Amino acid sequence: MTAERDKFHDILNRLVISMDNIHHVVVRSLEEKKPLLVHNAFNNPEVDPELAQLLGVDSFLVLPMLARNRRVGVILADNVITRQPITDDDLRSIETFTFPVAFAIERASLYERLQEEVSKLQEANRRLQEQQELLVKMEKMALVGRITSSIAHSIRNPLMVIGGFARSVLKATPDNDPKRTFIDSIVDEARQMEEVLDEILTYSDALYPIRDFWDVNQLVDTVIRDIQQKALAQNYSCHFHPADGLPQAYVDYKQLSYCLRNILLGTIDSLEDGTLEISTCQEGDRIVIQIDDLGHRLSQDELEALLTPFAETREMGSGLNLALCRNMLEKLDIPFLVVAPPESGVRYSIKLPTRKEEQS
Image 1: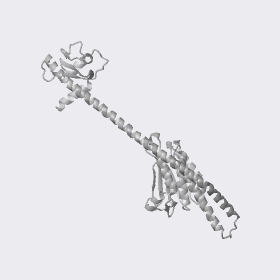
Image 2: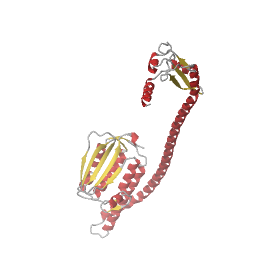
Image 3: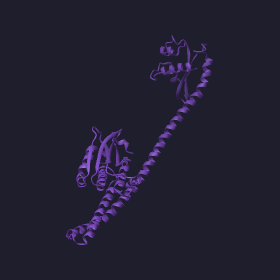
Image 4: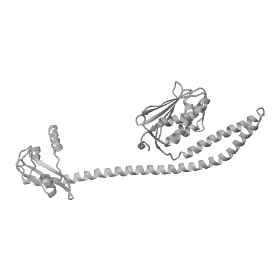
């Protein structure tokens, strides 16, 4: 049976007939919607010699399969096994068989098409639901952004007045005045509050990113130059190792620069005499920015606190900046990983997309 089945598969694979060949016996049977009994196939002028040669028989039946006047297929029946003559009774017997076969094939085809349409509809409904959820989320985010921005601006104005007056008073106060310590504390706290407000306003502006293709090495180099003065003041050294031949990354330049600057400044502010190793490389369809802070040693609890808003770590202070960076990068669908290897140091990894379709 295996050999017979393989033989029929070979015949079917070679049995290709164009519907434009209106004189072909198979096409004629379909067009006329009636069965044909073919005799003397090898010498019959109405039979394609290639078809007779392929079937290897001198007589055969061609029976169109019709379902509600729709042409479903063709049954070819021959006497290659029995070698008995094919009669008109044989034709009528098999003709009776063609209707249920055509009906079954049509129903199977309709069911397959129905399943395809159902799958398309389910996928459309899923996408519609995702879009609706995204719209609701964006409306909530926009509302939070407006409220946050309004509160931050309301606080900033009196805070700038307080800080300005405190700095003026501090300049006019002698070094030996006992009140100078209190005034200095007011100036420091006002400056810290202004920095927090800047973070909040930046977060509010980050709700709607503007993406484009950018050179990652140039972006990182620009950020390092911006923080170079602060690094020198803290006696911190930054070594950049850019990879050659990187494709451009599809990112929001402003937000990515802000996150990189915050990561570097947060590291530099918390320690003196340290080293930062910054590198870029390509992993598959992503560009990886890797920052190795070799000066810190953090436990797992301290690492988790570092990524929690307003949490404090013993060595690196408040986790607000990194938490905001992670939130902003997540909104851009950019993975942001922070790990503390057992040997020492903290490693930050940012994986940037290089194609638009990678953004969800």
